[in-house]
Structure formats: structure tokens, C-alpha cells
Image (cartoon, rainbow, N blue to C red; front, side, top):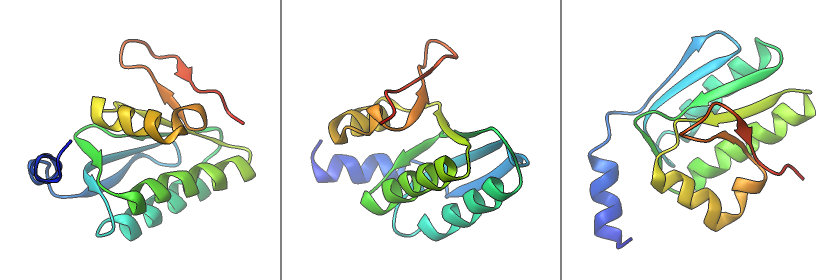
Length: 125
């Protein structure tokens, strides 16, 4: 995707917001996850990680990963969750985000739900 097209997609997203909708269990993210929003998302994820058990769902409705910093926040959360005996599951992935995970090989590492089913899929290392 050309740079100007990617920037247009990111501009069309709502203002960044990350909300812990079910404490310790579900975080809803809206807007672009990039270098500008990385610290805010990291703080919300760390709060959710500390406040729950089992699976933590990261709902990416109306969200796009804008750069490597944003992707790094998600990968970091995944690693922290694994060390704590928990699982991070990405849901409501846009086709663009799913393509990014496939290109980087992270679709084999990060748990995510298929848009057409509720089953978690990945091939964790």
C-alpha cells in the first residue's frame, strides 16, 4: 500500500482510545496504534494484565496498527502475559492488520480470532 494511502486510512480512524471494558479481561482499542499512542496503550494493557487472570482479549474494532512501535506494544504485552501464565488474544482484526501479522510472521505467534468464528488461532512457539 502506498504511503499516502496508508496515511489516509490512519487519518480516517477515530481519535485513539484504549478502554478496559471488562477489568482484567477485555481492552477495547479504537484509533491508530503508533508511536503517539504506544505509551497510553502500554499503560492500559499493563493495568489489565495485573488485574486479571486467564485470557485477556484485545478488541481491535475500529483500530489499525500504524507503525512498528504500535506492533511492539502488542508483542511486548504478549510476552509479559506468557510470563505471567496468561494469554493475549486479538479480536476484530481488520484485513490490513491481519495482513501485517502475516507479513511479519506474527500470525504464528500472537493468538487471534478468525473474523468468521470465535476460535482462537495461532501456532505459538
